[in-house]
Length: 122
Image 1 (cartoon, rainbow, N blue to C red):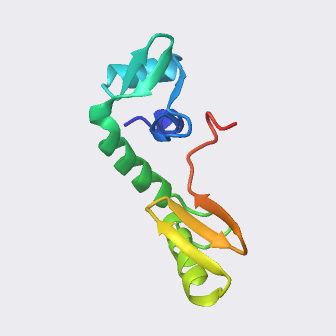
Image 2: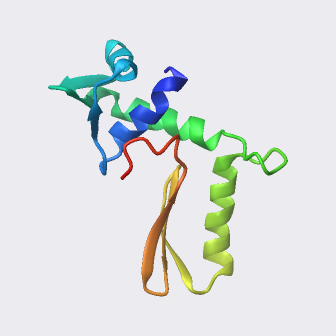
């Protein structure tokens, strides 16, 4: 999977976004069978979803955190989840995935996510 495609594939795999206008990058991903056209929009090919999600998780978790000495993003997320569970009485871990952590605190809820880019975010 081409590294340039990751932000677009991440956006297409995200149910909050799901489709993007077709561009050159998405045309390339379509030729690899990862994306399907829906008019002038692109959507993730259903048969590619699991492979795309696995590749995204692997690449995002394996990125180095620049301000640390050798710590990877996945390790940092795991440590933060452990800190929330074990050390913070007013924080509840609602869910954990390879690239996301759902949290509740003092009446608020949120998600901490590892992301390739903010493509498609509004």
